[in-house]
Length: 242
Image 1 (cartoon, rainbow, N blue to C red):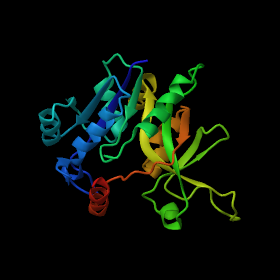
Image 2: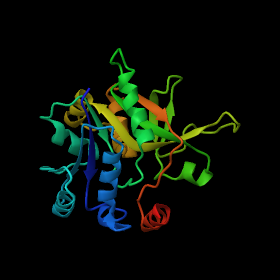
Image 3: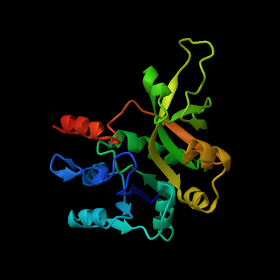
Image 4: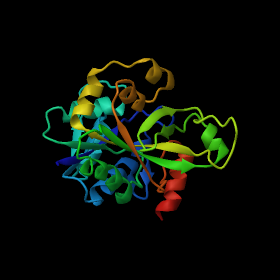
């Protein structure tokens, strides 16, 4: 299989504008993320795909592979779909641009899903990490996922799922980490299919795949890393980088 990584990179993030260009120990966050993906050694090629001249020039200046997105997109999957449309690839791994601590263990986990999928029944693979903090469970910015007994995703939500009508040790919560691995055909289907009600309500792009019957295999990981969504996250990343 030919496997590539794509890092969608918007400059104008709503909660933390220009976060990908913030300095993280001498280099911008997006450069740190790109280098982390390359250093895993898992990919035939790693690309940043962006709508920003600043990010484009920065990655190019570092000797990296970067593509300019030609259209406006509502989500990262659409931006990646445009970029890979004419590429001869089998699996595309979407690495979030604000995760400079992206690690080999997590990425190899989602890639291994497809190597073991002899019946080609899996359309996507993604990561989940167990969470126990009540504030995080209730936080609408934390996307939760529930799975079946084979770890196929049943639903994603910003609400706590499952609802703990009777609390007990059996109630477990998982946070969805925004790393996806797609078969190319699933990604091409995504960008041509319109958004439906559930995705529009929750504002979670993974739901579109479920609404159209795609199968998402979830891989549990214990690696949490640091996602840079706020200035406070950036300070935590700086402290952890040392």
